[in-house]
Image (cartoon, rainbow, N blue to C red; front, side, top):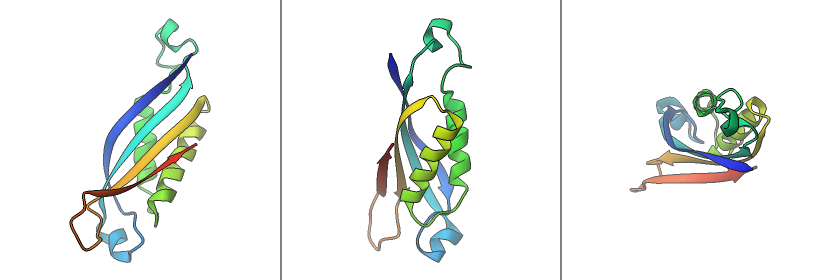
Length: 117
């Protein structure tokens, strides 16, 4: 049986952006994740050790967000790669990275990209 773990609206201050100023002053970002994996014995044994631990998932994302990138596409790819490395049992990842209030010269809530692997 497969199951999905969803983490929504994790918010970080980070320094991603194509403009030098964005990389100096930073911005607010959110990350949404959907992780698909095999349930295995996780529920049967009520075992955190067998599960894809969402506290560890959050820590992996937080670490990736500290590494400045020019595009949010690269940020999303880095998150997916880091999660799959840390949790080989993950079968699928859907990752959305959003930059809140991007500097586009007008009022805009956010811009985001979604990658699936």
